[in-house]
Length: 345
Image (cartoon, rainbow, N blue to C red; front, side, top):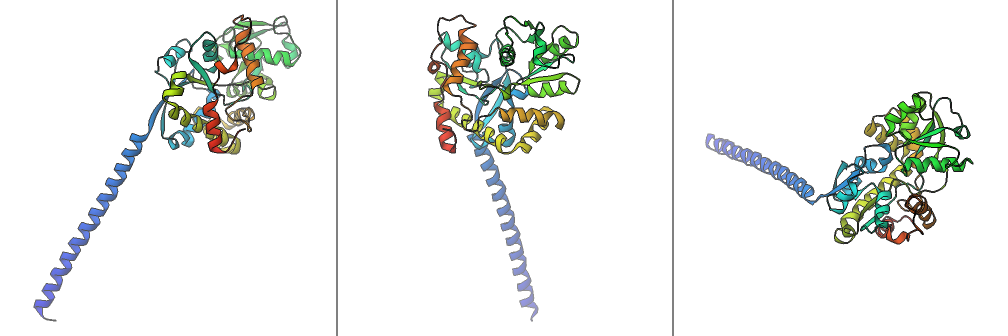
């Protein structure tokens, strides 16, 4: 090989090496740029949906399961959950500052008075509350003549206690006294001090108390149907932002199906989200899963809705007759989402 040929070959290899390195760098740049562009497109495509909760507690487990499992993201939604005081949540909902609120009961009462609100989704077909008694109370029947704590008159804690009492043959109006003991923490103190003798709690709080010598008297998930933990939106949202609300509904349905089929993963999410030990998260998740209707997830039958309306609206508001369920509840999006997922009736 002549020196001239060798030098030309070396130069060519050098140019080829530079060209190959340049091509590799260009390819890497294009890949990175493409990934960045796709991530920006996905971020831009994700639509914000604002969900109001009264607090962060175990009663909203399906919502947090959906968030952790990525179901809202699959639906192109970015969820922003906000703790909103129950006194102002309906005002914020009607004003459009919130898309969906976990306040179906209050929304239905407001709709009875003419507000343009509808309950649209009930994660549970039965109440997830557990009635807990102070250490000296072993059975529901022992509550006769005792005081039961509630958050406020007409609240879900009072309705739940009434259901348990009636189930066990006691008269809520004659056999017990109801006392507004506030939230869970103040109610626990009230039970320790003997001010109240029982109260309905979310399942995680109930099993935490059970570890402290309090007694589980009854789980409402073992009793009759009672649409529970419902969400509501406005009539305007159901028309003007219907597709967004349906995607939220579909994500929530996926959460319920996940809970029904993947109990171990549900327990893990509950432990991570609420910081509970397994001996609390596992039985609490079991109560929540038991309360889901696998045949009609997210919905409720007409009979249970009418009973709910009568006890939670008609009687407390002293109405002459119960309002039609159709002006309080709209399951049209739920039925569409159920059909798309191949579930439900």
